[in-house]
Image 1 (cartoon, rainbow, N blue to C red):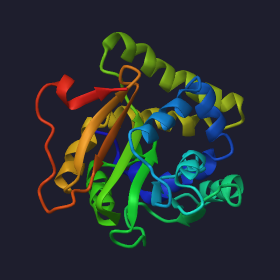
Image 2: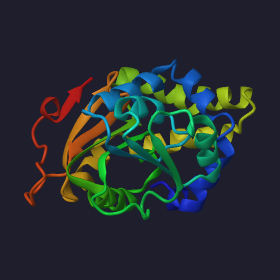
Image 3: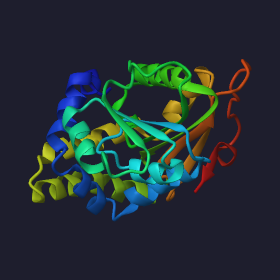
Image 4: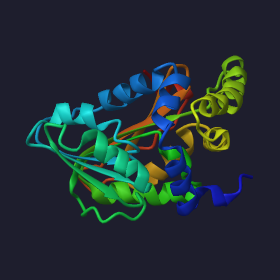
Length: 258
């Protein structure tokens, strides 16, 4: 079993503080640009109208913010939340004053933020789920339920371990060996980038999180991208108090490929 210390708030914060200088470039190169495509697909799962409030959890350097800002326009607002002060500063430098909408960047833990209850129309997040333990994922799901308005929607996406053995073996070799090398070549710490593989293998895919979201009262469905190299969670907070729909049945019924 993976040591729980890698999920501690201070450990994750320090990891991303140290990776901040090279993280965006390494992600883009190592994913062959797929990280951008997957972020677009994550947002494409939702209807994001103008003049709403969108919460971007584990925002990193605010990579989702430009696309969200174009959708919601000058009457809308993005609240970008991240636990890493260096990542928040990067997001501030990259996006404040450059978006049509209002942007608020908050250095907070997504598991215990000061975002008001029932204040978000939409919650989005890219590539942050894997850094949570099982218990933390349960807390995260409850927090999403708390901050979403009734009828509000959400979309998460995460790098995942593909189910096909023929794809999984070379994928894991690449994740564990080539990506740390790319990080080293770009003057990053290869041990930090090796941790991304550790998190991904422990996470598996979004199947590991869907029950927590459903148990929190969120109607939730799975999404699969590029043969399972990324997976996502998409859904809504019900308008009524009815229980969230449980996704039973075969894989083909539970996962929608995108």
